[in-house]
Image 1 (cartoon, rainbow, N blue to C red):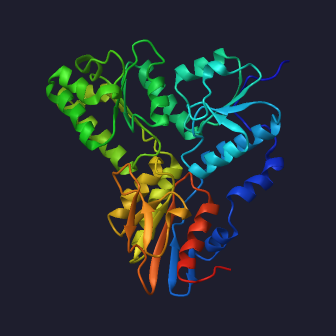
Image 2: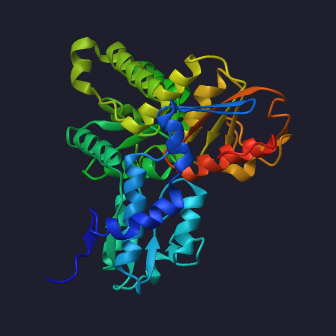
Image 3: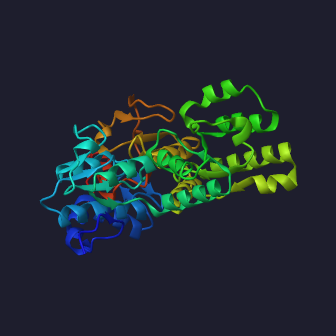
Length: 396
């Protein structure tokens, strides 16, 4: 038999790459905090760490596969279709390992690939058209798509086979949502509509209940609907799904609002046939959101640091939750903490990093810490040490 051209499991090299993974991403300090009730007292500073944070299983798996791929094919050209996860440090490390990107940053396109090349598919997955293009180049594909994402795809494909339009709660520009939306087109006549939030869902629900201006509806949603989408026809049967990293409470509220609109339009009995919904928020996303709420409920804090990539959806929702209760700063990495006076961070709802003064209180302070599912423990440790250093405190 020839060399496998598609690999979606470990290459059997975990033992060989584990020392590299430990060196790059693990943290003895964070593990010590876990063992001591997720707290750390150093001088007048009290750090409180959420009980669930940082790398999830799917991220761990994707990174491990990338390292195994480099180990398995030391002499081959290795590429990845885009960011393996939304963490700049992790993606920079892949570049240092000689893995090149096919998203334009390295000046290489799919058309430049050769049959001996190896291509990693990121944890978010890739759209069907991209997969077909890669298969046509006859490269070796190493697929790290997260199992939670695959579960959403199965539901969307099931909706489509039953004649339901997939209504996806997500961010249309996000890699995962684009990949999921493509699965709604996997069957003849399949369609999708992507809604970012309750406000956009309300547009869809109003059209279901009352009809409306078709052209205005399509113009408002733009690329967030499938080609040839006709709201008068394709909103008659709906299956709800979601990007796995969205805010769970909002996904559930959207599904309930759409169900209510279908009942209002068709009646309870007929709506039961026309509407389907499955909660496809991944368990790791939910666990991190629940753990943050529990941390906030433990008692007052002076500030919260949420660590993770600015383009990380699950991290952004942690910022959204914390920001309602305590002054919150979303930082990509420890270097964003410029001094005890200045922090670089991305405010909720913004796409720009800003510099804010006076972020670290003088005197005793209780500081909450959590991190998105793409943030390694090593980065959390860097943040802890940097904050302590601003107070001339050392962490043993």
